[in-house]
Amino acid sequence: MPPRSLVVVGQQAYAMDPDGPLARVVAGALGGPGPPTIEPLIESFEAIAGRYPPEVRELYLASDAAAMRAASLAVMTEGAVSDRLREWSLPVLFCMAAGDADFFEQAKRAAEEIPDAEFMVVEDTDHLGMDTADAQPALEAVLRTFRRGDA
Image (cartoon, rainbow, N blue to C red; front, side, top):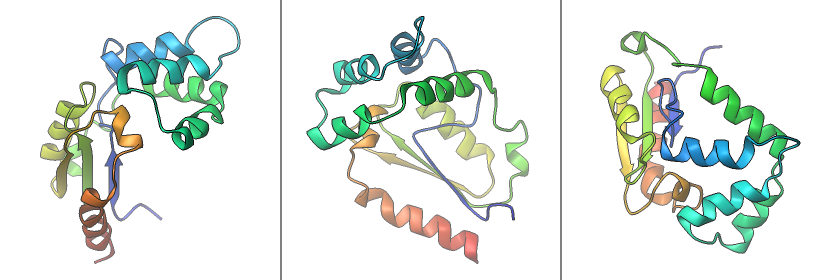
């Protein structure tokens, strides 16, 4: 069964820019020789976003570094999600951080191309801050998107 709605948080629909600030950080932290470890990635993120609260840091430390490396490589090489966004016929919400240097403009462009898309901005945070941002400001838009998909 195809999806009836789509919520995209902190991401965009086009090919990734390997020279984007966050892409460079992730590649540097996970892309070295040998088996990847998660600590360099967390330290790189914290150098940008500040020290994570203990419960968030603990969740990141429990992440599988090899899976994170594989996901990062897949995202960097997959290209555009679709070259026919104007043909999408489902409600889509792009929820982006105001300070997202890597994905903000591309997500905004995708929201303009998709006929039934909405673009919302979470103020006072960046891409990394979306992991710990208060979800309450986005909740109504998320629910509205899902309800439109059920209609």
